[in-house]
Length: 213
Image (cartoon, rainbow, N blue to C red):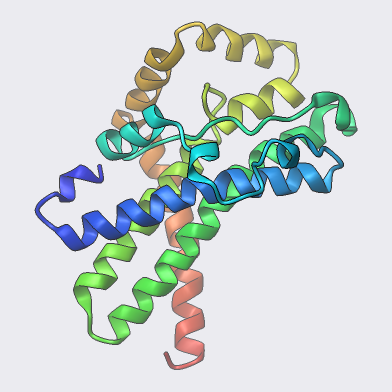
């Protein structure tokens, strides 16, 4: 998805830099939430630091450029440190999609700002970045490895849900790619992305209009 903007260096560079940083931010957010619940495992292993070598998964970064979707190294947690019968640990994993939605919101704010300044190229670059960030948030909600939704389902889901996640996990990266493509071609991903995009952009439009930006 990102590489399809190869003929537009501005979009390619900005989307690439912001999304690689977003991958790292995703992990830091989860590590922070884990610490809030009393699990110091991520902090001890350096996941609260902005260190690309700690967070980035080479294959995940490669797929970010090829498919427009990437992933990071898994944030290490200790399930025994969480109460709530798995709910708290699931909230740690769901912090990941929320982090991407925050990145998308900030990207759209920058896009609105550049648009009002008359810089359509930069506005377009950050709008694309916002779309890619929303894609990451949406995909990570699904219970398929290596996605956050799968880890949340294993922590909090019932027996049938955990069994489904484990069965899909047997196919490894191939299972994820097939699942990703099916969601894309059937329009499921696009529909959910559209919901979040409308929600965020609608809110920002009202906010910018309120302040006369």
